[in-house]
Length: 478
Image: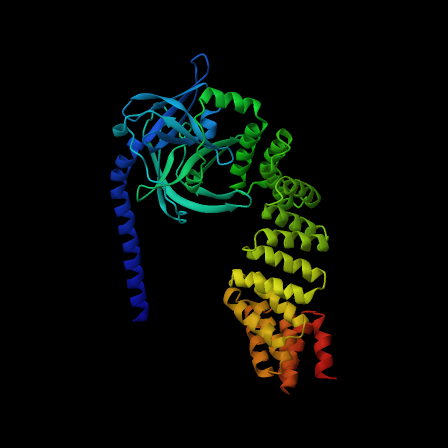
């Protein structure tokens, strides 16, 4: 009967999901009809009036359009094409985010023709349905739909959105819109080493753009070509596109070139250091991260990188100091406290180590790594009850053999042999090959006077040719 009820509930759930999906599809034409007037095609020209490139953009106000920075690079004049075919000249640029590959254009379009799209202030959810309305020339108002496949946090940069909706050449700068008609990102098509990298820059970066004095497109292009930072930012942006796919090996050369182009570019040094670290090139990582810290000494994340690289190189004292400096600048990150704890562990400063883990858990109570390390530090200090409590919390997040073995060891030292044997039994059930848990189960049986069951564990360990076998035998036959 229960099985039938479950099957019926599952069938209703599937039917409900299908109905919601169908409803979304039914709603899509209306949503697209609403968005299209806000989307524009962008054509750029050189000083002789020759067409250079094509891209897309969208209105966020009657006199303001957002597009990708790379769409307008190297141009002398920019022209907007509305969906109805009307054309308008772009007056200039009033804001640029080189690292986010964004530009805000000043335009003069009749308000009735410039339907502004609202900007979402919240980060989209994975699996959320989205629509991209682009304007590759000849295909104005081209629509693609899909979902948010991931929202990635790139260290030192921020969030980046992966989408399943394809982005056609000429659609760079298109709005990525949720089912409420709000912009959640700006679609970007980057070309790096022959790869097409489709992703979206989060809409929150639009809200963070700093408005400056109007600058003509030609003057911005002239400055860009002479400005090392602008060239470096373009390289940086391509590197970030590759980081969105965890392709650190291909991303690294872009950050290296960016630092060569502009040696004072702290963000590029940071990403180079981070990529070196992921690729286990720790000496180079440390050097690059120190350069980033020299250029931006107030940036906490640079010291986190220094700490991680120093730790990997066995330089635990400098690692601890780097993490402490990061915490002085920003004490809100649990992972930084955790990194400090790991460094202090290597320095045998156990009391300070436990404090670091406790602070990590105060920030993030679900930090399983800090919870486990705190329990182990308490064991080292022979604070068995505190260790037991830490591991009891850990089993919520890591219900596995090692966790139950830790619980058993804490209970054993507290003289609670019945409870300890139960925990060790659970550990062995999770992983019959965890030999230490089997040894611990055997010695619990010895304490309980059940030598027959202890002998069973010995035989299993002996057959496995485990080093723990003889240690248990000594306890069975002292």
